[in-house]
Length: 269
Image (cartoon, rainbow, N blue to C red; front, side, top):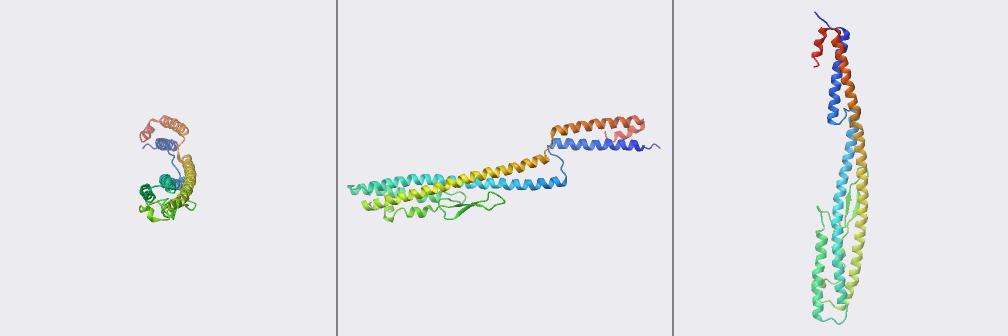
């Protein structure tokens, strides 16, 4: 009975090993990812989790920026209306106006004034309103740090303080004295809007910086992950060529030992 010599068995084992390595290299090239050991897999899992947390932070910041954008637009509209109200009150503070003129000014004033509260109440996204809230809005931008807090602006309170007489909003005639008082109050109200706009601008700048930071950390983590698991195509192609050459040599050596040993090659073909 024919038996394989130790050398034939060794060469056959080399052919099998080469074939397994060839398949492994081809799979890695196809996937674009290296076959990682347990330690490398652990590192990639940990880094990927951290990168995902920062990606979520970017989404949180984007949502907060949307709220700020709506708040900023609202304050701009309120500023325009408040300016018109101040102008109307300035007219009413002048002497010599007929009662009919004062009635007309009061009607226009009341109509515009009612829009202020409507605007501040409507400036909301998913229940978050920066111009109708005395509470702070928080944004989790860094998984390792406390949330960033943005103090809401209680504009309804400021609106209510902007006219000493509720009767004005109920279409009562402007007296010269009352109109003069309202001019002063509207000036204060416009200052409050300006302060709120400044706060929103500061928050927006801070959030932009947080976005840049969170994206930078995420990109760095993902870059590290890629450096661990991505294949070096050039090196892998060279390794594949080397394995193919080695396998060809092993095939040749086995086949040259004797004709019977050709049977072993059929296993790998």
